[in-house]
Image (cartoon, rainbow, N blue to C red):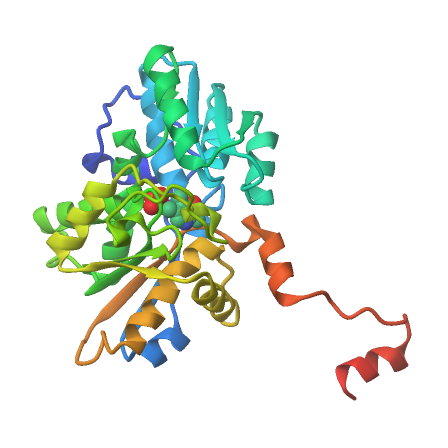
Length: 349
Ligand SMILES: *Cc1c(COP(=O)(O)O)cnc(C)c1O
């Protein structure tokens, strides 16, 4: 049987009625890839949950299928979000899928090229503001409170409900929850969703344990680590460039209830992890690499000594979203004359 998308597959865990009009692009069922290199370094079995293979290239699709479905069910005709890029790409695609209008507010000049292209091609009304994500979200909250427009940012509880299915898939693949789960933290909806999913699976007997949650923010956009709002967050990992996370308290609860941590990684560490993943054949966007950077950092500090078991690391979005970052950090291809001699010389023969 072909994969029907997360709503149909995990229906019993979601707020869906028989007559709910499911809006899906068959999201979910993403691969859990064993990482030989990371496992070798950590001395634990490390798996990468490659969310870049969702229909619009990020995990946002899991939450968006449900948020748009519920907006449709409620009779809404317009949805709106603030976005660092992937939320707008996903909202635009799912709104197009069911003939709804989509409005997105983005921080000017801070959206990766691929994400902007997606929002535009799916027909969203894209509005850039001279302000950061946190400002954009404030405006969207104000507008959706006053007008008949559904808010589809992750403060919409259906987003979290949909996103928790990634934890279900991990447990279904491994036969149990892992010992550790590493994840990048921006607005903190995803760490909240995974923790909810892991707890629900344990409660219903589908898994025997819950993992220790390991969250990672970018060093200059690390409000949860610092314990205060960051007014002007900075990082190359634009998807986690957030100074005042919407799910702040719930992320702290996930950390504390699981006996985990939320720490910071520098842009340099993020870029190193980004290249490290690519060298094993896996292309994830910089924000995704924050989770791998965090694992490598914890390993360096001896965190995994004496530990056993499995580590799952969420790679939140596809590397193709942000091609400029790749090219800027790797350099250009060699250009030579169209002749055998020049090519052989360049190869080193
Ligand atoms: C949205 C996003 C994040 C951050 O997730 P939160 O739920 O906001 O913490 C990380 N990486 C990518 C690629 C994203 O699109």
